[in-house]
Amino acid sequence: MDQTKSMFSELPAGRPREMLFSVLQQENLIADNVNYKINKVMGSRWFSSLYTIEASSPTKNLKLYLKCLPEDEMKNEMLGCTFCFQYEITFYNNILPAYKELKRKICPQGTLLPVSAPQCFAAEWNGKDDVVILKDMSISEFMILDRHTPMKLPEMCLVMKEIARMHGYSLATKILWPEKMKEIKDNLIEWYFINPQFEVFGKPVFYNNLEDIYTVMKKYYEGESVYLKKFHQFITRSTDVLLKLAKPDPTNEPLQCFNTWGPLD
Image (cartoon, rainbow, N blue to C red):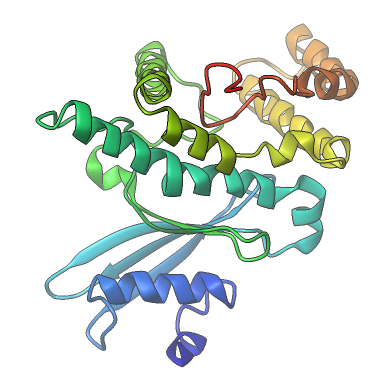
């Protein structure tokens, strides 16, 4: 991997560069005639650093998203970023493959995927070099929305249908393949909510969410609007209450990307 030291300098050093090199090598896109474009997506308040990557040769073009931990170590520690990566990487490495395998068993002729998700080329989580590399969804006719742009009703309906389909597969897995359900459950630990430091990094997480909502509201209401004033007061007073509401019930953890349909024991 010595070659990676001089390539992809726009990315943080170490595993992000190495994993991208490996993915592009598998796709036959490491060569002198391949052009690379790497751009960082600005999103200063959130959990990950996000990069768009395009590799193009005379015969092939590949667009990717690469997500990795923020380079700001203080931000990592303050927000508990690595715990959120654990959910996403478990989804791509454990949950989605199990759903696809179940679908092949019960409906081998069906073409619809269990969950509409981008192709994952690589996903790794160790608490220090967390990286996810996904195919750019926009080229597969996925709808890409900005977090600060409210969804319209048709878009909300699409989201609810996808969530319902995923929950349907989780229930089917529990009924038809209980040993796989237990295996997945054992791999999916709510580190974020059970961590003793939850209140420390949970408060800025809730604050960031509320600030995002406030940013959207300012697009629709004037500066002196009573709605803006009331919501700003809510932001300053609500984080402690939200922290208490988010504390998990140990008999049925609030799993973010997976539905266990109640305790397994």
